[in-house]
Amino acid sequence: MVARVVVMAVVAMAALLAQTVVMPAFEVLSWRADLITLTVIGFALANGPQTGVRYGFAAGLARDLASGGGQLGLSSLVLLLVGWVAGQSRRYLSTSPIGGQMVVGGISSAAALLLEGVLGALLGAGQPGPLILLQAAMVIGLYNAALSPVVFWPLSSISTRFPGGPLTGG
Amino acid sequence: MRSRSTLVILVLVSLGLMTLSYRQGSAGPLARVERGATAVVTPVQEGFAALVRPIGGLLASIGQFGRLRAENEQLRADLKQLDQRQTSLAEIERENNRLRKLLDFRQRLQLVTTGAQVIAPPPGALEWRVLVDAGADKGVETGMAVVNSQGLVGRVVEVTAEYSWIELATSPSAGYAVRIAQNGELGALTGRGPEPYQLEIYDTEAELPKGAEIVTHSYRGSRIPDGIPVGLVSSPPGGLAQGTRYVEVRPYVDFTALSTVLVVLNAPQRPAELEPGEVVTDPNPPRPPPPSEHAGALTPQGAPGDVPGDVPGEATAREPQTGSGG
Image 1 (cartoon, each protein chain N blue to C red):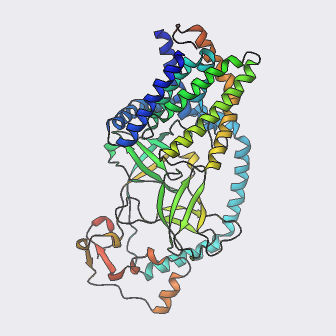
Image 2: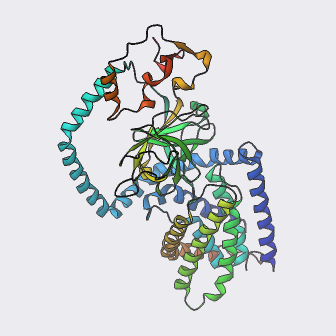
Image 3: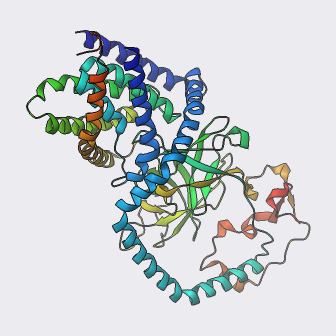
């Protein structure tokens, strides 16, 4: 159980570092893929909504803290909701795992960005206009969908190697 | 069922954090926790960046081969154009020298700056900030302007002992007082993320020359220096009619390739901004040039608000860094 938590923390930290250091070199139409959200969706699909919610909250909190001066709690709220929805959706993915995972990865990522944009605007944080937000959601959704198989496969292996107890599953 | 109760609890915790963070601003304990996290995470990011960035850059270059080739061709074309414009540049230089003599410019005011290396952007997609390796230990304070060789980059929004967060000028929450360099018309500039800036011109009847240069405009209490280049008016395409209130401005700074920036620690005040006690009248004011020559000098590039001779009373400052005394 402890090993599983440590491994998941390492994954979150690695995603955070890759997101800020590596991904800026791979922007598509000025937008980066959202690796942190992808890890939340990946763990949720592999383990269920309980893990999705917990990991989403922790990864979101880490992202808020690493953003400096942002809205603390905003990313954690968005990512735990994404983790829950993705975890709930795994029961529908048995027929076409890879295609289904890509669809869930893309749609959940786009929805997460839109939700974060809307909540940020409600909280008074400066947000781009709705058209730019939609463009970002579309680009990041497609980008994340394309990366989904690459990211989900190691997360699935980690989940199998470090299984959670009865409290962590869906 | 268990996942739902966890969901509800963590949603409430998140909402609580958001409320506290919103209410406390940058002075509360949560903000201190954030600054502490920045101080802990940033050295790891710096180390990781030093390790990984060359590999990432190489891979990115391969992916951008087509774009780089097109850019190379564009640069060659630009170079040819620049060669053709040599003559007009010489003319501008001569005009510039004449204006300097005419208006008795003594010395260009210098900004006091400290250099900073960009470490990383924030992880979120909707955040237009960068983390730099200069903090309170180098005299950096919140609100200071950040520039690079191309122009205005942004302003400091958060400072730790060794690092600072810079809010880029492209951020939708960033706003700057600016003016059109050619005619001094004032306006407000706001960022729009990946899109060009939006400029609101206060005077709806003001003339907006196509390709007009936009520079910062300082006012009392502002820490943004005056006259920092921002960008060029780029819209509406095909000419700018009188009465246009909002226009797009294409930034000079390439925000996708930020590496070294300068934080402006001390900007000289414009004479109009000084307190009354700080201003003395020049005992030997320069003689004004003949009226016809003076009027002609300001028409092509001169901005009435930009030149010392335009300030009533020929004021000079006590502060040595203003450099306009005597």
